[in-house]
Length: 64
Image 1: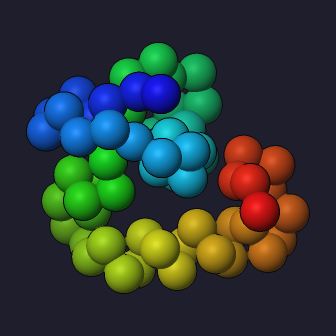
Image 2: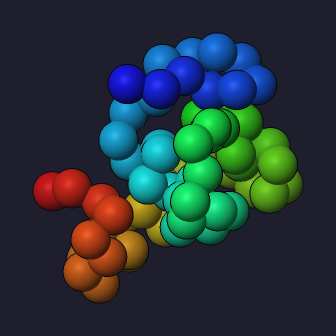
């Protein structure tokens, strides 16, 4: 498992998938959902909604 390159928190698979989907598909370093929310000037809740929408649309980066 990877860690956030900003705060060093251990990441879950949805966080790495979201980073790949929104920032860089080929990334090998990632931001956690909180640091990614800060980067995009949004909230954790909005990113969690995005994850659900992407999962429901069939994006294969996100596990069920």
